[in-house]
Length: 55
Image 1: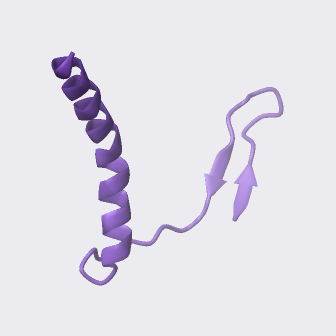
Image 2: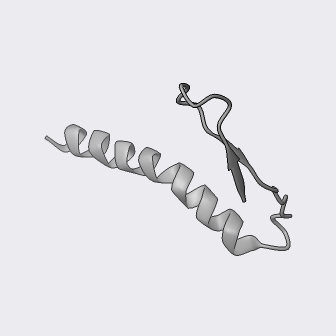
């Protein structure tokens, strides 16, 4: 991976690398992990709201 700075006085850092697109059907564990990560905050909020309803 290469990194370069435009100007020594600037704070921006460019990261140059390669990306790879993976098919979710070929890598179901990755897709499942991403979905779980995206849904986790929603599940936490639902649990919070349900506990408020029980009070």
